[in-house]
Image (cartoon, rainbow, N blue to C red; front, side, top):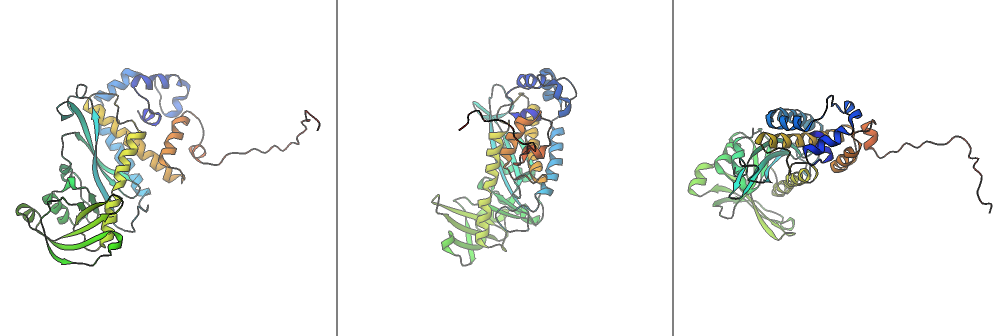
Length: 345
């Protein structure tokens, strides 16, 4: 299944045909038995997807250690996470358990990534109808960390739980925000900032769900000509840093785009819920493995370039560093060249 991700195979029959034609080289890839489509289909249906989840978590722990000092655009010592989800469309007739709309099926991949290296730390695969805000109940909040979210996660009771866990959040507010200003801080409007206020929520339910003080920051995006309002419980960072943190949230969108374009998670080899989750977790494991190889070997290439090179060199018995590096072995001919000229000028 990892071979299918690296080479972008389209079906179990495709995997079987490609691997069987390379039977003499399978042992060196770690495949010690014959490859059968029926065996793969049975494993997809019966082998618990949590096995691959646990393996991916081991790789995630290793990758986060390698990327612990990786810059992400803002000079902060705190760990910064971005939380978001992406929808993976499915055919409702083939995946009847993945209810989304009346005539459409889908699953949601809720992901929490560490912005240092864009490493996913938590992933939850749910039916498409699952609301994003419910994932705030599933993640383990780390004290001192910063969580950056879009307004789909705006729930004051859950945000207050993050605040009580001594963590910080930066979230985009909705237009109907009810907020009473208590004090203001000066801002440099040439940077796009418009205001930096501190106060409390005034709505009946919001004021009870979040009784503590909040910080409201207004920012105008001149490129998109859009006004943004951010809410945060972090009072030490500057207003511009808060706006930059939300801008860095875009890394999770790039992560979703990357894995959908370059890994096999939009077309599945099985129709059961176990098969879908198995394939998604194997794809995440491949992504993490490529990130680990890039960092451990110090390769100055993009993840996309590494993935493309591996896809055509899986059956070659060459050191992976030699395959992925730009250096070429040049053999110099020590013997003099006695080749005669064909034409005498």
